[in-house]
Length: 323
Image 1 (cartoon, rainbow, N blue to C red):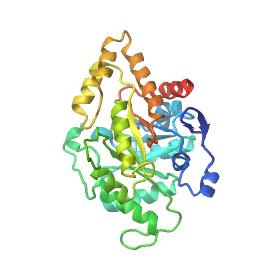
Image 2: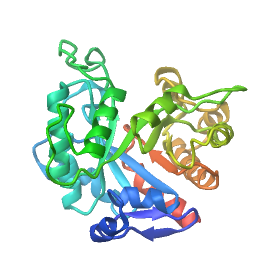
Image 3: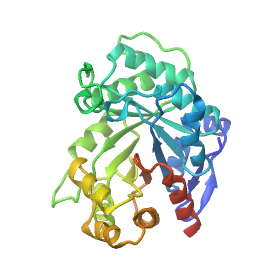
Image 4: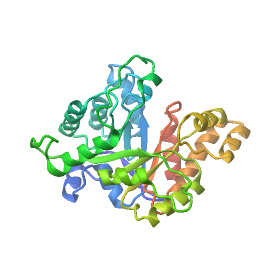
C-alpha cells in the first residue's frame, strides 16, 4: 500500500500486506493504529457515475497522505456509486479504504453478505453507521430498512470475526480479519460523566471511533482526559473529526444543523475577519491537526469536507511539513 501515517511529528510509510499478516494486524490501518503513530483518515463520497476515473479524481490526491480513506454509503440519503465497489477501486490503486456500511438500506441477510463480500475483495476496514433517514434525502419516498441498528450490526460483525460463523451458526470459510469502526460524538465532559454510548460500542467489539466535528482543542483535551481516567483510551482508538471550513457562514450552519458539532466562537470569528476565508479555514485545520497530535489518548484525526474535498490533501501535507 502507498499510504502514510503521521508519526506525531513525522510521516512514515505503512508496511505491505504481507507484513500485516505476520504482525497479526487486520489491515494497514490496523497496523498504523497499533503503532501509536498519529493517524489521519479522510472521507470522500463516491460520485454518481459509472466511470471509475470520476471516483479516482477525488481519491488519488489523498494517496500517500491519508492513512486510509472512507467511502461513504449513501451519504445524505442519496444514491451514488456503490461504496463496496468504490472501496475496491481505491484498493486497486494503492489507497487503504474504509468501507462505510449503513443499516438503512439492507436487511441483516444483505448486510452479512456484504461483509463477506468485502472480505473476499480484500477490504478489511468497516465503519458501521445507522445511516441518514431517507426523508432527509432527494428521494424521500424511499423505504428505510433498519432491520438492525448499528450496535447490533457491530455485534454481528464481531461474532463473525470471533467465531468464524454467521449468526445462524453456519461456518464462514476463509479469513475473517476485520477492523471494526463506529461513529460517536465528543462532548465537554461534566463532572462524573460516563460515555455510555461509547462503552456500549466498545462492548460490541468496535476497534476505532471516528467522531463528529470538534474544532475546540480545549474540549478535546478534557474529553480525552476523561476517557483516559475511565481506561477507555488508548485501548479504543479515537479519531477526532475536523474540517477545513471555507467560511464563517458554513461554520455557523454546521454548528446549528449537524448534531453534535462543536465549533467555538473563536474559529467563527477568525473566518469572519479573514480576507480569504478558505485559506484561513485550511490554516485552522492544519493547526488543529498539529495540536491533536500532541494530546495523549487521541489516536488521530478524521478530515471531512463534503463541500470542499479538494482542500483535504493540502491540509494533510501542510500539517506534516509543519512538523
